[in-house]
Image (spheres, rainbow, N blue to C red):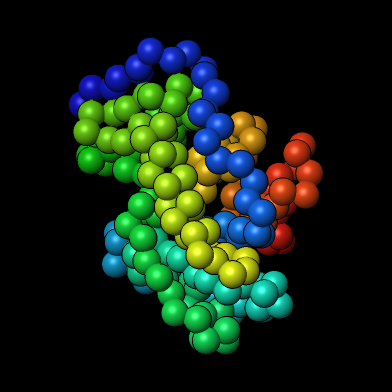
Length: 199
């Protein structure tokens, strides 16, 4: 299994994402039983989904767009039910495929992927490619939205989205993510375009 580094050396992402005018809530899914697309939430994850709904219910969310993976949809289902909003799915929000083959040292490869955005393992996806599709998904989610939008995705892709927004999120920040996690993206301050809401 080969790894390609690409031409960039610790480069910064293309700043194609500016903070949206409407608040955007980026959500990482709750605790799940596995990494497979159909892996459901654990019992603890199901309880977390209710807490997630408690947190977001009062934020005026008018649209919910989610990764089609079961753990993402189940994480946001309680909020959707309370707000009586349908959960739309977008395949571009699935987790980045680091490698088509399981790797014991996957964390090392993930770390390199934050520093070298074109780094790719075998048939895996580079950070830059994942950022591009996720950014396009956000643009679609915001289109025709009449209020705040919740977008449900996965850990690596969430970190890459935050990195795309202001360039600061990397491997150390990804390591501190929790299941679930929530970040509100706003245009209120250029030096602080997003804030963490989940505690």
